[in-house]
Length: 150
Image (cartoon, rainbow, N blue to C red):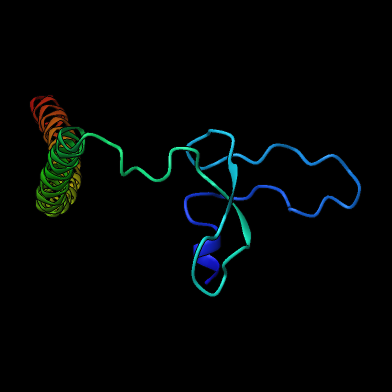
């Protein structure tokens, strides 16, 4: 029953003003609401605030059909956009999964690179050690030749 009393309006202030000046009540559409009286039913005689545009029985049927078509077009656009969003979400999941595997692959490659650098450092160190050993052996050999000739 309460929905009948407020049909087409939204009361933003109380109907009881306790001696104060009541502010204007606005309808949901933004227009100033008008006071109406219930004409039949168990609430007959009760006052309520309603939209000044109600009832819309005097609207041209072609206008209503045009509005219905516009609503249908918008609903279709919304449905298409929702489908596109769902498709893009699925694509995003695939890309994120692929990105995760590529990140794992990158981590593995970095680890391999680190091990290769360590091996290179060891090889370089061994080569330097070998070069120093060779140089020392040549010096000892030269020294031995000098001692043996003398």
